[in-house]
Length: 230
Image (tube, helix red, strand yellow):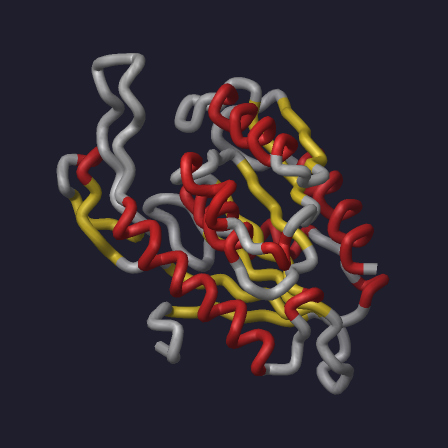
């Protein structure tokens, strides 16, 4: 454990004696942990920009209402969808904001370790995607970019008023499965449209898959990361 309050798994590419060129903080989905996206990171080739530090935090263990109160790693609680289509989704705002503070602490930690905020990419899948968009758009320091995979925009009503001026126009990579059975494609599209309306350059991709990641997506992501980190 460390001063972020999260268990961390860390790795680094490139020569051990060379300075770190960039950091990639990767937030996992519901019920997973920091190990979940290590294989995806190993598929990336970012050697053109120099050594990259990868940080894989594990979310706290908490009861999840949607899963009958079963305790698992989760960035925030999830409630069953409303039976009334017109009613807004209930969100765990206290849980979201508590985890947002922990994600910001991860960013601050990288800066303290010598990586400028402008060389940090925040990336997440599913719940981790929601946290990436929540924390990344509100971060007080200018980041390099956000990677939002198979997720959605949480607390959308407050995004416009709470987003930081520092990250206005921040580039965002978004990928989603066309047959996602957990987070409907329409929720990803709604997040994309909200970000575009706020002036963010969004690179949007869909893939013939469910709630997952595919090699084609990793390839597109690799190219995008090289673009924003060069």
